Length: 218
Image (cartoon, rainbow, N blue to C red; front, side, top):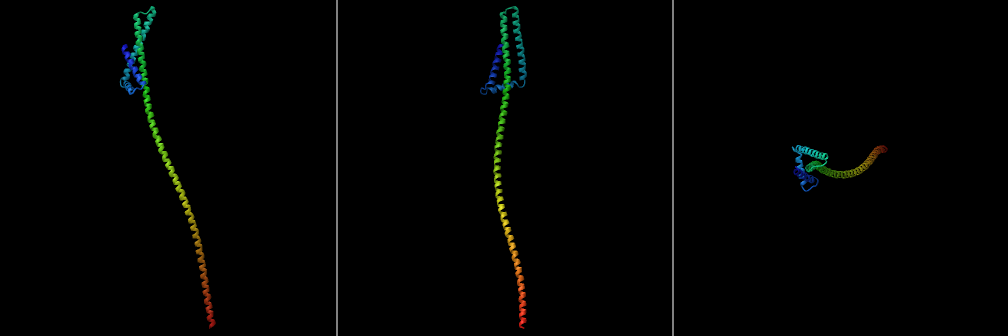
């Protein structure tokens, strides 16, 4: 029994050491072993062994107390009782250390599993952050490009407005010239009409003078 407990205690110590200290791929191997123990019928088996060892521990402690009480009553402890007391004390110590190391291994495995999950989550979050940063850079580049395009369009619009103003000025100037030309044409037409009237009047006067001249000759 004691040799078996020493073997179990040594194995548990080795597993706990591998879980605490990363030595190449041995930690992953130890994690896989503990995972297998915690899957399927492993938990029930472990609980059964833990209960059995707890019962043995309680029995050993009871035997130790019984031997101590008997020694107190007798006032002395026989060599046989001393051997039994030391044997039960050693068994109780080994069982206690075994149960404690089993609890430590369970907690180490639990927290290491959480750390692995957190690392995966952090890695995924980091990739998402890098992706978002890349998208943000692309968005900023597109925004800068759009800003440059907007500035270019604004410059084009300003140039077009300037050209439009020039065209408007030319149109207004041409309209002014057209109005002046129309006024000049109208003045010429009026003057032409007045000249025609004057010409008609002169023709009439000429005819009257010719008539008078003929009458005077006759």
